[in-house]
Length: 278
Length: 237
Image (cartoon, rainbow over all chains, first blue to last red; front, top):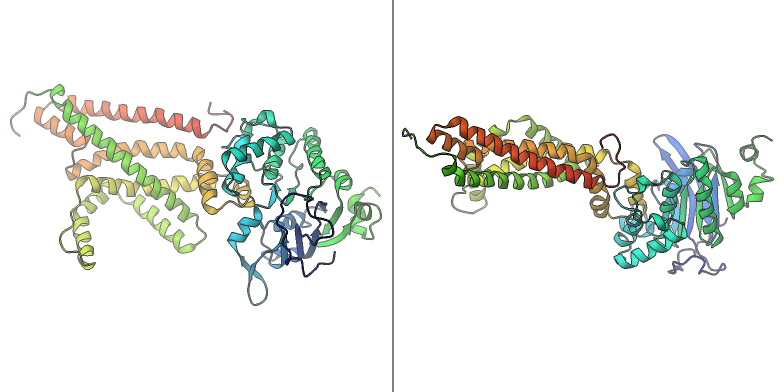
């Protein structure tokens, strides 16, 4: 997890996942020494995270450990107070005060980079006034300035991918939670992002709907997409992840391969978290 | 005017139709301008910038507190001298005059804007935060977010209040008669006075206002169905 200072000098312009050789210094996402406070509450205390191209990272931890906040810092839905962030090989340009605290950022860069990091939310957050198709074409058309025709072709492709092609003209409110989440995944995929972020994608679903969403995510992992996921599905995290990060009270308790984190972690709190019965 | 004319409803049909048309023109124009003012006002009320919030709050509070009739008379009599003074100060010679139509539309739109500000503010606040967050997360510009997510997202909540404001506005156009402008109510008054058939003409006026409001209620109902197209019919259906 050492960071290279040269990370930003060789921007990689290709957007297709897996196109970069593993040896190149590609930085889909890298966070260094992130600190986030809400008022007096310090939610993240010096968290660093590096995500390799084509890898799946799961962030696990108890409620309140800061895992969703960390994920939301990665597309700046939450603005960290301190730290550095690289998204799609580009260092985020923060405005800082004299103490080095982050007080602002470059809106244009933010909009540009957010188009390269797509998020899937716990509550889906589909737009109810658009059809399924409209939900998926909206961002490519408005943000990436794709033609309607091109956006629709892309949307149909990803709807097929998540098995929702037959619902393309329905409105979200008429779909089950699992179906809505699959549409939300297609919406994120349609931006053809460098990184996909999942914020507890199955936590709001009925138990019998969880597997349909997990199987879509698993298939995305299998095709080598770069993903970062906050999840409570331990078995799933273990199965699909290349890297697991256990957050504990705002710091990284353990990070490593699933085996390192789940089987023989040196961190006692982590051992108790992943197998509470033991 | 002491002579009682023998004319009836038929003879006055032309002027009354013209008056009704003028009423609709005043109402539609003030509503459209009021809607724009309301969108600006609501955005300002929800702005993170305190001075803007203060200004919008002052506008919506003050205007809603003063009777429309008073504002109308105030602007009609005090408006031209004030504008003339401003124009002269800016180096334009001469007198500024405002005609009745512009005064009517101006005042009614200004008042509509204040009420609209509150209706739209509430409707915008009712949009689930996640929808706006999703727009942010996908890199929407502030304008794209406003036009594509905020406006369609708030309309289902805003339409009932907006429909109410429209009905009130149609009836408020009758106030314009005090500045002697030939809209429906003024024409009816003239007809009633000159024929002494007060009941007939005022009843006719009532029927015309009723026809206007019923038609627009039906239109608003269709509009509401359209903006709620993505929502399953529940309690209201």
